[in-house]
Length: 316
Image (cartoon, rainbow, N blue to C red):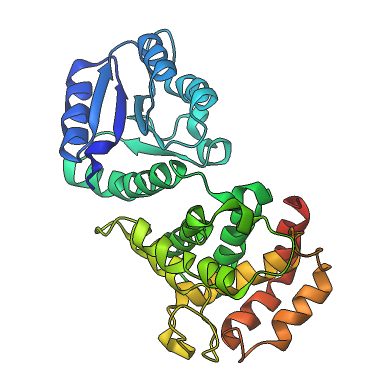
């Protein structure tokens, strides 16, 4: 899979700048549509699937910020670059606060700098687009995947991972159960205890999920594949599919394992009622060195206030 499955829109009323951005964006592998008129570009965005936008700031009829706000109504989370020669313009001062998925790019710039800034966002968009094509059964449980991603990101921050690594685990952890698409609904939603054969079928979702994800150089796919395969391993070797123990389990899997178990405990399922927050936290603490990495447990407990905020805000 290459980035040529992604589409980009370039908007700039100056032909020289528009051509440069268009050429460099194509170098990155995008399929590019470019416009000199922001109104025409907005009409195009309304009628097509778009993965990234590059827009000039100062333009007639509609400035870049207005274009960004209108594009957001159509595509909520795509990366948007506002390109300007006025980095200190008052209107741009709080851009990151207004729209954290947008970035400022200052002219003049080198093609290499442009590619280095764009590629990480393109890789993330490629991953999100792929995952969105699957109907994840876990989505019926409201915000489970989002909470697992957020809990995992908090743990990563507590381990002093940089922001790129935090973003990786945040997105990868949300796809931990992608392999569940292979499990028949009558088993997935069963309220009675599973039979031995049914349990064996469910356990296959870890390896199935890992095999579903493309094998390429995109770190989001690589991390998600590891997460899917290892999030049911346990540090004492009692997990599956491989019975790994301790540090033999990827840290991505160890983090997601704790986040996933805690969220399932605090959630209602067809086969169980939700535990309260404190009881679930006690379970995690009591199982350090057995089910969970003790270092990760300690980070989780130290950040319990932030965990509880997410638990409350995104309750089912």
